[in-house]
Image (cartoon, rainbow, N blue to C red; front, top):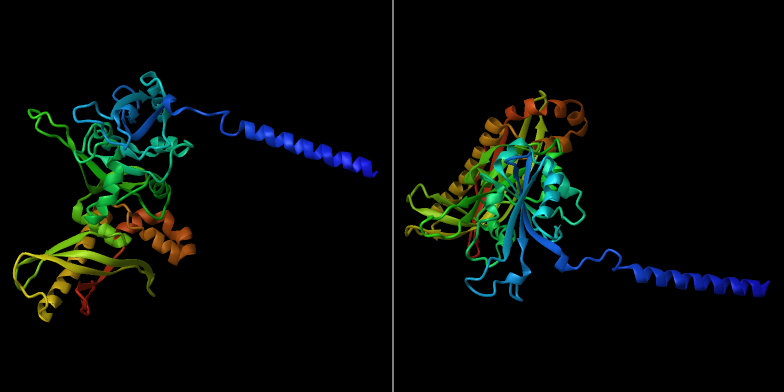
Length: 400
């Protein structure tokens, strides 16, 4: 019996060793693809097709046009990007049709952004985003932009400070919070919001700036303003100030704020520091719905156009009042545009009522939210502090 058990243990050990050898021999090689066989897609754009329903444009990286540090080898050499388009009756067919023009398989593991053309955005974008959602190579954390005009044209634009045009989304994502004239949005967050009943999605707007054709310079790009959606369909735009008003409510405002001091009529610039916001849904004793928005912010005096003594308590108090009122007016402008004109809940008021009254939301509010939302009164309270060296004064509270 002891001898049989010993042979059994030996056989079992041998089987495990053979299994490990087989597994290690398979890992990393059975589906290995060489980078030379792939077309590395830096950015993607989707549009309405000229001949079919959908058009896809991809910006393909050409490694041979780049130096070892990722920059162009020398001035005058060919662009490190190759832009190609294909069309199909479905987004999937359009994507597969790219292989007729590129003798390499498109690889989306390093893709940095998705550009949506304006015409397609008004029709609905979920069909094109769904093929990215199901692609195991594409990451939901990549940035998404709304183009004014065709999205494919954006991929042909060049930004002179970037040797590699494919770095555009990464660059704008890093610097845009310093000005707060639009939002930063990811593909994953947009899909989640578009499928949600408690908050509508938004996109930053990118525009191609054409240069003088006689000069022959490549066009540049500008990212500002915000596209407001209802579900997955574009319904309108928020301008720069309205976009910052939205960012105040979402707790994402940053950058600078400029306004005029009433007493001296000179302009001052505030560099925004810490800020916080809260959106509270309330139903009073009479059953009336309303929303309270509370903003608290601190900023530094960054610049002025005159010679007023900013350490004078009366002037500083006036600056803080104007600081708070400017924020309130920006929020009010964003509310008027989104709530009254576009009738889209980009502020997430539905989410606030869902969190505060979950049963009432499911039973009564959610089915009628499109009719209720435009008429909900909103109270805006702003507390603004100005910091200069170590001095922080008590700030005003501006109410409705």
